[in-house]
Length: 215
Length: 258
Image 1 (cartoon, rainbow over the protein chains, first blue to last red):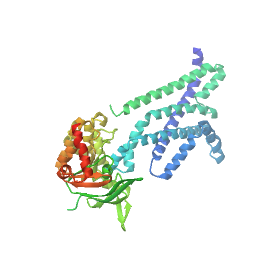
Image 2: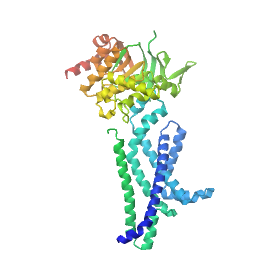
Image 3: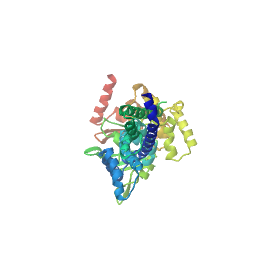
Image 4: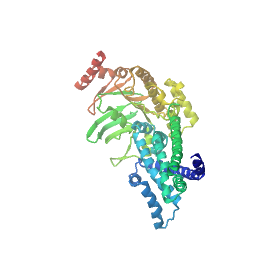
């Protein structure tokens, strides 16, 4: 059994590297989209808020797999030819972003109104106190749920194997077909996912401690 | 000289709730005015109107001669731009019941934030001023602490220093000792007393009657959104004219025997 692991490891590792790569890209893009749209979802402008809410409600109402298919099969109809990798990264980022956006919005809204009162009373204008007072606190508060979404994001990437992007899950499928030992192979695949996610959880806990107000 | 605060027939409603009803009064430069009244009588709302945290519906509030929050065009009030409103708030410091320090910043960062970003004072200079103010409120050693590490009384003294760092012309105090443990009330009141002595114009909402008697040049009694009585502490506290004020004060004297 050990030799089975050793024999299949190089191929799985290649897939795992791709999974890591996709996770990182999607997570970073998702964070950027999510944080920006989260902040925009609380600003006074009704038009911008409307656009952001349309995005969030639309995305939250569609399964990721369907969004993935939509992006992959629909865009070429409009003459936009995306390769599978880019279509996958775009879908997952947009999907992750919608959930992060709601976390940020909730965090901003949960801050006591006194924070805004104090900032205003000190002569600060909207964007100054958002930047210096509200968003920094909201981000700190959002960290645990964002780590949660980040873990989901890693696992979302397993879906891209369906549109033939060569990730860890696809590598596992290929290896199980070659070795005819699917249980062993998928156990190995699961272990690798687990290691990724566990490391990220630990990193999240570490950051949470670092960012706590009391050092 | 004209009064530094002039409030004329101010009305304010929250939905159907008419909180301030034709409130008028003035505050002279260097005066300490204490506002008393039962909870829900509108005194906090009145205070928050004085720096436009609550926007009054009608009437006029003049701060140092300038109409607050609105511009008068052909007799109609037009809301000023956010920039102008922010600018006018620089002149009026407020200290809140719940401190409202910024928890993600140290004490020093709390104090220098607005002086450096809003007043555009050089950071070095702002730090110097902050240290002087912290020394004044007796917390120079807490410079690098985060607010959560301080007691309520200490947090409130930092909040006072933070407001003073903007060098306001007027300081508002909104029940600043109500959230404090009884043994911490004294240290905050001492700072306020010292501030009043230094000639700062202050409007203070409080339930501390002894303090009001000590510090106030004038006491305003509010009831149901109106100013019912005002005068020197002696007049208001010792010889109340209206039945409502008598009833209000009676409750306090009874409390002392509990």
